[in-house]
Length: 302
Image (tube, rainbow, N blue to C red; front, side, top):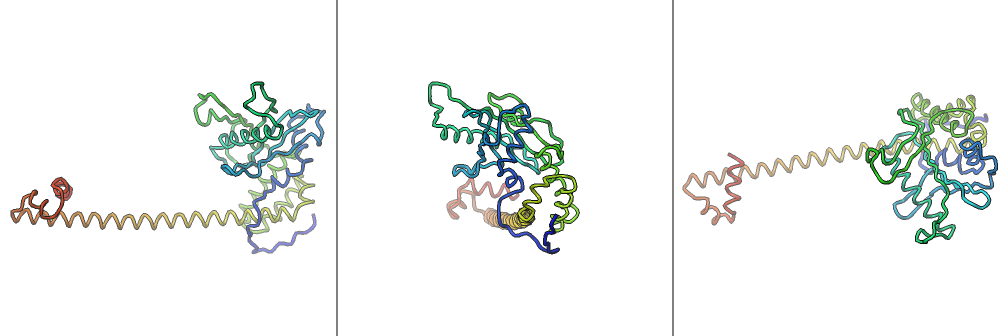
């Protein structure tokens, strides 16, 4: 591998929201390879049959996903496949993917000039939903929307397959292996660019994404550097939120203390006035307070 210029104390600057996953699979040839790994029986499909449909941006709700594509055969859409890459597990993943598939179908109907309001059934490609999981949490081979949220009792469902094996003989396995190597090196080097250099070196030795890394190693350095910066920003944000919460708590405590002190002072004054022979009704007329309010203060501060 050609040397990459790294400065030991260089930290990341936030430049892009891109990731190694999205960069890898923006190449339709890599997407085609991914599809063939999942459907080796489909010998008729060629790279020209792959239509990328990743949700980049949607104005309503800002819906976007990591990878989506449609497989066309003889002019007919056969499959729509959606992928999410996850290193940290989220319990709301099936709900998000439900949004993704709904938005993908909405766009597909618009592109094919079909309408769900037609009396005749419209043509839809069959959905396949996947998560490439690179973390350490033990997960089943499949997760379910109705199982996640309704203990299996719901009229709708979305089922998502989990891919988590880091194997060098599949492109998705190589990506998972790459991610695991990166996480291991982060534990050793932290947010130093030495972590990136070691990640690339080890992955080339193991056969993880060798063509991709040799062609795009400088872009990979930039993208992983950005991850360092995003992590630092998240940590700083968490610290700031914690400090703000503590400050609000202290201010609320002081305010509550002042309020309690004022109430006690009013009650002491009322007691002294009653000891001097004033009735609750007389105090109400004199101080402009209701009798119920006076009795409440006295009862609370006895």
